Structures are given as structure tokens and as C-alpha cells.
Image 1 (cartoon, rainbow over the protein chains, first blue to last red):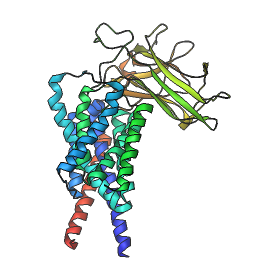
Image 2: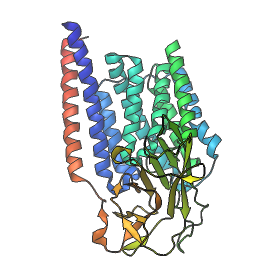
Image 3: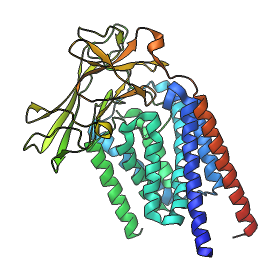
Image 4: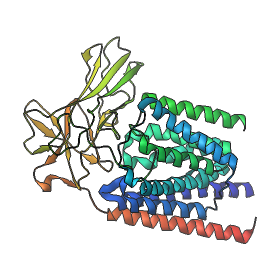
Length: 191
Length: 241
């Protein structure tokens, strides 16, 4: 009976978090309107909602040299295929980089705190690490579809798996957060 | 590091490189705020357009398995892609003996006859499928129907609509806004597609501003989620570790 209750509890936590993610995405899309992913206000409110969900789920962050190193290596791997297939190019105005980079880092970190932190932990406790890696990757891919279109789904699914693997390797969500932020920020110079 | 972790790392990075080779999204941005699209690349730029590189064509090889065409994306290489064609499994008629087919979307300048109900604001993309040099027809319907996404040259609140060239002119298609400046339509047949800004604003789909219904629903579910998590956390504290 106790085991059943604990199992049901874990399932409910995972489902509640998935519901919260869907609501946060809906909120972002609704607030952004035609501005889509370029809406700073909608992006930051989305990040706040994800962070609050992660805090309520009692997600903790472990910062260590090992986690940072794994994250930095992950960022290089995420950027490598882009460098190899497309090379470096500057198409964005340099003056707006700092503001963009700050907001992007906030959103990416919040996403990782939720996806590879709270959601990963909940899925891991409920169904094990494999389901946690895949579940968080699927959530990561799906949450971008309303903003960028279906064409990002295969790539984001693969990226989600890579970030999940980094979470497994480091034992904390700070490693995929470093990789995610690093890859996003490098994207300014990559076409 | 456990063996399972090593396997996940290897599988994830193989998947990452494979996807970049097979179905690149045309953007290195996995997420972020407002990393703007590069300026639209026109085949024939309007006088006010910025100088850009030439637009790219989208091309993809569709595999044939068990007599059915496989699923495939064909994206152009701009940031973000100006066109993306998705071909679901079984969407294309497979000629006898064919093992692969090619799907292409080639950018062209608009040429007469032009749409009578508006102005083409993008390149015209000629979408085609072929096997062994022979054209291939779309046979998929419903979930098996290919879809086309195109990026608009601007993110105007009153968005453009898809139109397809017919024997007598241009035909308006059901258009869905699926991104900031990305529009989608179903492609029952291939041919020439373009985004057209309707001449009369009433014909344009208003899609700007805040979506109040979605906002209210999202907020309600989010508040409910916070409440559930808060109650569970309080209960856990009472029970203790």
C-alpha cells in the first residue's frame, strides 16, 4: 500500500509539472502574440514561471568544477555541427548583443532548472533515468514548436537528448544549463 | 560515469550530428529571446530591401521503404529557413523500381500572372518531387498530406496568406500562423507557392497582440499547478523526511 501511494505520488508530481510546463508555454505564446520568440516580456515571464515551478518542486542546483566542465564541453559539441556545416557569420547588430545575451541566458537557465532539474527528477523517481532523459527531451522539443514551427522538432529532440545525457553525466542540471546557455550565446555568430 | 550514461552520451551526440546532416532546422538557436531572423533573401529584391546573399533552395532525399515514401523535411539554409517542406510517410506516389525520391523547393522571382487579390511579399517557391528525373505526384491526404512552412519577409500583425499558382491564376489556401513570422499550409499538390499580403486588410488574418483566451487558460492552469505543488510541499514538510 505504501509503495503504491509513493508510486502514485511520483506520477502525480510528474503530471503536475508537465501541466505547469504546458500552461507556461501557453502563457508565453499568448503574451507574445505576433512577436513570438522575440518578445522579451513573454520570454522573461515564461522563465519566471518555470523557475517558480522548479522552486516549488524543490529542485536544487549543484555548482562544481566538474559540472561546469561537462557543460562547457557540451556547449562545444552542440555548436560543432553548426560550425562544420555552416561556418561563422555575423548577421546581427553587435550593439544589441548584451541585452539579448542576458535575456537568453535567463530563459535557457530557467528551462534547464525546470526540464533537466524538476521534471527530470520527477520522471527519474517515477520511471527511471531513461524515461527522464527521453521525457525531458520530448518536452524540450515540443515547447519550441509554437514559437518556431514544426521544422525545429527533430533538431530540438536531438539537442534535448544531448542535454539529458549531460544531466546524467554530471548528476546536476547546472551542466546542461551551461551547455544550453553557451550554445545559445554562440548562435549570435553562427548561421 | 556509468555505462548507461556513456551510452546516452554516445546516442545523443550521434542523434545530434545525424539530425544536422539529415534535417537541419536552419538555425543554431535551440532557444532564446529574439535572436532575429536574418533579413529576407529575395531573388528579386524590392528597392527598399537590404543587400543579402542569394536565397537558397531546399532539397531532401526521400527514402522508399516497403513501397511507401518515407518522412522527410526539406529546409532552405537561411536563418531561419525561408521555406520548409515536410513530407509525411506515404505522401508521395512511388514509381516502380524507385528507391529514393528528391523533394526540392526552388526560389523564383514572381512573374505574371500575379495574384489579383494582393501582393506577393516573398519569393515564389517552386516545390517539386522527382524520381529518376520524372515528376512524382502527391497522393497523401489528411495526415499524409505534405505541409509547407514559409517565413514572411516581415512580421506584420495582419499576416499574409498562402497562395498557389494554378492554370488560370493564383488560389488562396488555408493558412495557419505557426511562429513569429512563419506560416503553414497543407500541400495537396506541389507547384508554385508564395505568401501574399491581401489587398484588403479585412482579408488578412489578424493574429497580432495578446491572445486573451489562451492567456486566461494558461494563467488558470499555472495557478492551479502552483497550488498543487505548494500543497504537496507543505504536506511533505509536515510528514517530514
